[in-house]
Image (cartoon, rainbow, N blue to C red):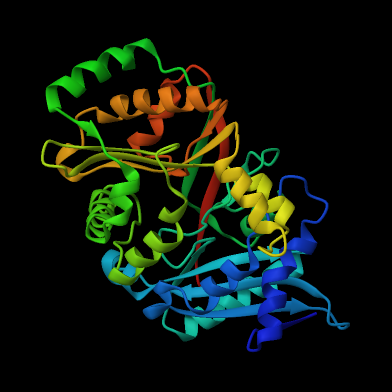
Length: 372
């Protein structure tokens, strides 16, 4: 077995395709679109300021055994006064020596770059897939989250990695809102004179979209562990790639009397099943599966972004948002709602525990270790 740095287009395609073979017999695994992965590894917005390297582990016959990407985000290190290297896109066969060789290679590059710690799995910034699955292996993940075999965390802990933080997700069965929240919501809407925004119109206004994303960034920075504020390029990329799937059918934005965003709940119908059918490719039929998932009947909703602008935080507006969303989902025949991954220490994650039908769906962990 040897470690090979990815330097050619052929190696890059192999880097992207490897998990599809590794998880071929795993019913929970959701393949990522190969075109999206290649873009993330070669030309995404965070690469304007991040550095990264990719490696494959291969045997003597040239068969791929594992992969890893190491990343250094100087904005993160400056904001939090750290010298951390991130790792992500980490996948390996069930062989500890392969896993260790990959992590050691990433750590050596980090040390040569002046870093003193390595942590992950993470993305370049706070937007991508992050956290190694440690609980909920029996469940199918959302399209924008990591799935891994149970031996992954065992390998990292054997290498000396320890928990840095956990993200948790909850699943709610049904769309009924607790009666106490309904009463609170009615009072809040009258008191603050809030109205439901027309998302179709809002998303066509580029200035409004950028203002919304800036507000989202401001509301999370300082309140969410390790959050990194967006650059202008990252905001444009998020608007182009993620908000394009958003509609009034699944999402709700409340604005104040001046038309400014007060609180938001961005969700999309689950596309995990569609991505399984697409097998990593949009063509020839992948795009059809995705359109059916987004615009046809879908009984599962993925809750992606939830929050309030800084001046509206702490006023209990989540109750109002949940009540409005509940009506939408009931009409659409939604049965399951899955929350986005949230840091376990975030008070917002506790909201889901207030639903009688909620249960922990998945737990993911960011591991950290000092570089030897």
